[in-house]
Image 1 (cartoon, helix red, strand yellow):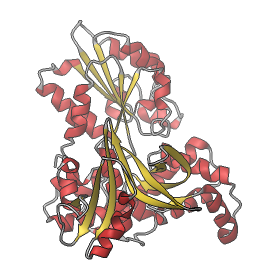
Image 2: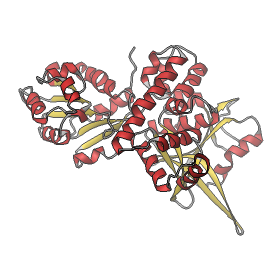
Image 3: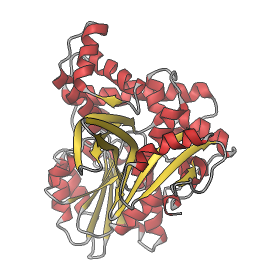
Image 4: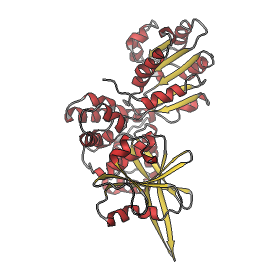
Length: 426
């Protein structure tokens, strides 16, 4: 079964031959290798590139390592990487003319001095380089600094709902419910039972994601790390404050974790693309409020697996899903705050999301259902406090959906929002 990921293919095509190393990043198991070695490779062949001018190499594949005269099991046993000179000589022998070559490298962190090797090849005018990597270094946001401006990042998300729905044979509501619970890791589309899916998610979280973080930062006691992830998973869409979490650890779990440690661990989660923080933005004051902030999970299935599929409140999951979809569409997304002062009192109203893309801005509220005029008024109260002309949108899960509220705010069903990539402009 082929899952089309056209938006990412388009990004790769737009970056062809731009003189930069194309770096495909993203959470483990989100489909980076598939995008590069199946989808993009097929595109290159289909566009007329000779097969011998597309050089694919996977540093975790025994068949590829053997081409270098090496044994992958010896490398693993001795904790060695592929020697830089051996690989460079192997590639140079395949660059036989001045025509354009495409170098597709998978798990390139397993190559010794890979930064130096890539920089040396990018200087060749007829070599275009694309890489993926899945260890903690490649999952880190600081990877791009290794190339001193020579890297071009493409962030790959797990399947968004539209991609997930494209391979589903079920109706929208059934597919939507499954997506809210199990998320969008591509391997799940091949699994039939709930037991298979839940086991896969729990195993991947424990043996892959958390292990990466522990190994990268040399954490000896990962109990606090796990407990913190539980707290964040339980509190999606709620405000997060490292100082308060530290006090909770001390009073409830009897563990001493400083606010600095908590903040650092959250940063580790972000650098591994497990979660993303949404900073609060003062709409009227036009300034950011650094703390507290909100945390959303890159994949809902991973979030739900962490807390054993408890706390599946659809209102919170819906908010997380909308946040992820906005980011998938390229928006920078903040949590909006509107402060209103009356006499000596000040009151803050929250807008779920302030989504910015170039000159576009949308104020967005997530609602499970509207129902009554009172409910509509409640959900749009924060919109009423914003005195600008940017579009204000309510995204609703259930009930009858009017196209406009009485105040002129746009109302979208979650179905229309997800299935139409231009839905915000309707």
